[in-house]
Length: 311
Image (cartoon, rainbow, N blue to C red; front, side):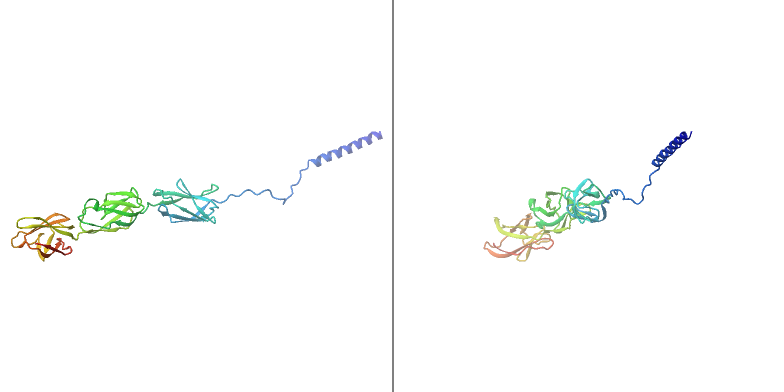
């Protein structure tokens, strides 16, 4: 009886020991606090930021400066869909040139970094090219010039197929020879100074230049023409003669409005064109003599005085 009891006790102790081991294995482990942190999450680089655009509107071919931050080492500027490589300085300054062929208009401008990050969009205006007028060749013509003698070339830059030439405020026909030259024919207008200007748009004009139309008569030569029984012709050649021009022969006026005739009312002045007058002279003697001759227009402008030797 005693032996059976002892065996029972030993078995029970073994059972308790086994059960205790199972309970100990199922106890949850405590997590230690303050251990080494895991790898930090990656942080993104801020997008390009624009603080100022100088200037905010400009003509093609000119330089623009953008100031801000986050431009990186390499970036491009976009005007609409046109990508323009920019010169970057310290990641805070972008410099670019508006392409010369860029059409005038309003564009969306933004900076795009080489990693693909783009900044905010801004409005940017590309102005029409302003024409520049430097020279008129020639800058003066005679009022009686005809045909090709009335052609003038306006020299400068930024002329286009849409450029218009204004003469005294009115558009006249012109021909584009190149981006540096426009040619036109001077209309028939009064003498004096006239204004020439080139416009690429209604609000985009060159500075005006003056074109002089000279009306002062000038004698180039006087020759003896046809001879008749009691008179002969003196042919007066030159320029800027008018239909109402008169001549003064040794102070005596012949022809022209209000011009007096000789005592016999025979001497006449005939207007051929602005380059030629014919003076019908009735000499009292066939012997040559010297006399002075001058052409005077109605407005009082007179040519130089020339000495003539004729009957």
